[in-house]
Each structure stands twice: as C-alpha cells, then as structure tokens.
Amino acid sequence: MALVRTHPLRRPYELPDDEQIARARIHPHVSEVVEVAPPNPAWPDWFAWVRDRITTALGPLAVRIEHVGSTSVPDLWAKPVIDVDLAVPDSTDESAYVPALEAEGFELRVREPEWEQHRLFRGHAPESNVHVFSPAAREPQRQRLFRDWLTTNDNDREAYGNLKRALAQREFSDVMHYNNAKASLIYDIYERIFLTDPTSAHDPHPRT
Image (cartoon, rainbow, N blue to C red):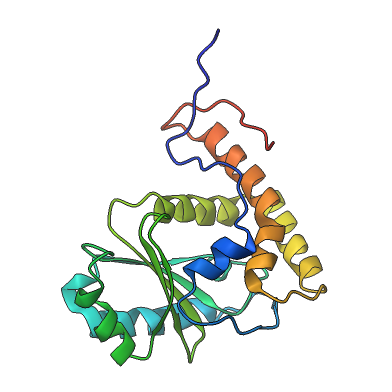
C-alpha cells in the first residue's frame, strides 16, 4: 500500500460547533451584522496603525506582526476588519502581554488552548482582530501561505471574493457561522496550495 504524503501545514476539514465556539469565548456572544466591502486601498494603512499600537504596547515582546486575512490581499472583497497575526514569546503567559494590549484598547475575546494556544483580541478605530500565537505555531504559517496564494492566483481570489459577497446577503447570527460557510472553499484552496508547494510533498486529501 502506497504511503499517503501529507503537507506539514494541512489541517483536517472540521467545523466547530456552537458548543465549541461558546467555550472559546470569554464574553457572552453579541450578534454582529456580517458586512463584506469592496477592496479598499486604505487597508494596508489601517494595518500599519494597528501594528504601531501593538508595538507601542509590547515593544520587544512583539516577536512578529503580520497583516493576514482578506484585507491583506489586493483586489479582494473583505469584511472591513484588519486581521493581524501577533507572535509573542509564549502565548500561554497572558500576564506578559494581556494587560499591555488591553491598556492600548485591545479586548481579549477568545482563548483557545486546544488550537495552538490561540488568543484573540478585538481592537477598534480601525476594527481589528489580533490573533496571538507563540512563534512556532503552524496557523500563522498557513495564513501567510493563503494570503500569498490569493495575491497571485486570480481564479481563487475571484472565487473566494464571490463566495463572501454571496454569503453576506444571508443573515448570520454569528460571524463564526459565516466562517463555517466559507470553510469548504478555503479547504479546497489549501489543497491546491499544498499540491503545488515545492518545499513539501503532498497527495490529494479530499474533503469527507
């Protein structure tokens, strides 16, 4: 039997259910309308503003700050919320960085120990999601791959943008349900990324 090769950054196709979503949240859920906006050339400047606030708050504790998510991809429709990956020396050591980020106006919203010790902060003016991981976490690597792929692959960027625009016409009581509705296309795009990645062998892993 031939050995099935798997890219080291592959994640199984799994959707969090409402119980898992609620367990990760630190505060009770407040419904938000999912808005998808046309590409905005100001989004990189918004990220720069968020990055500077994080740097002011954490100094050298901010090991890496990356603009990820749809607002980091030129010509892609997106929720007008800046997604930021922040690496700190140890994301489990909340005392080292949570008070400083909260003093700068970022609110800790999500704690997910089972997902590479991910923490999520919400910022305002501009709206932002700051995802905190330790430096060796795999998810930020995945997000950079996804960003770079969509930047250079017109067909997948258009398909992803069209899906988001269609989903925004539906009523979601929870943005996580909106994320789940995008998950199948995101998984399929990752499969294409992994199959063409020259740094690692990968055999097809169709969704089940």
